[in-house]
Length: 404
Picture 1 (tube, rainbow, N blue to C red):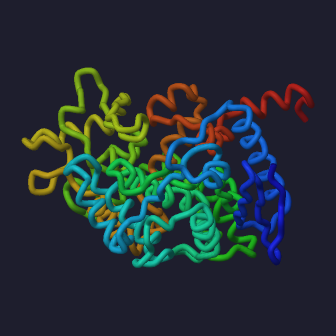
Picture 2: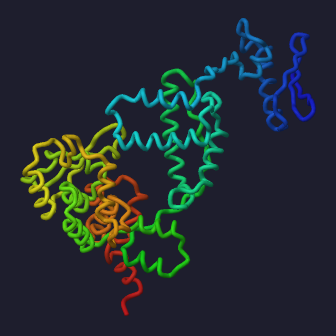
């Protein structure tokens, strides 16, 4: 049978079989761990002695007993050149052309840039452990983002999801032997995003004082424009005489809640003026699959898009040199036309999505219809605008306490 011995602070295992004495370090100073390993080894010795298991040929007995009754696995040792600096370019080269959107590739590069920055270009991929990933989470959680606020835990999760994609490719090509070691990672506490709010509500909170620039920026990201403000923005842009495609694209965004990526990939044939609908091409609802959702055409959107597409012969609704407009170009022109005006506070194309959803909710439109129009699938997002459902909550509470 086996027993424990101690060398300094480290436990080791001593056991006798067939008159032979064996000694092996358990490489731990934790008594509970050592006792657990001792009990497991004693069980396997008993099984050997009763003939319940056989010792495989050419296998070292102590190794067999200490390795759960299995021959010791030979660890995969990658050549020293398998560093992050070497692997990441190969990873991007392995991605088939056209399999990912340009914006997705851009985000992937940004995420892996942070991975390299924190781990270092010379980090050998075979060394990656759970502890390494936990240290990454903790370090990123202490860093500030572009507006001076701590990095959002959601961002850290997305960065590690990109790292996991790299790891999956490495495993599929036989370059790492195990799964990505992220199970059980602890992330900083996540603050709930603020509900969607009107311009007046946000200004009222800022006027009270005590909000940092970062906190104010978060509030403006939750802005939704009322229907009259939406039309005011659109009319303002028309007066600026911007790029010809910008006005119809803004009306499309404002009157359907489509995402920027959905706007730039839309095609002329997606607009069915006889049926009075537009099909929006999605890539977020089903992983690895393009799906569509249908939204009714409002009178203004129908009028604007009919006029815009009348003289168009290209495939895409918004083109540049016969190619779909890029998301970066859309963002650049969005901010350029609004800079210097009161509308410069608008953070990007997504404000029109927030506004579409919030205005629909505030008019009491069935949530199932809103979900179908904008492609919502998560309760977390629904919670940010359900407070706008009109009078239903107020009427319910008034039925309890009555009116004045």
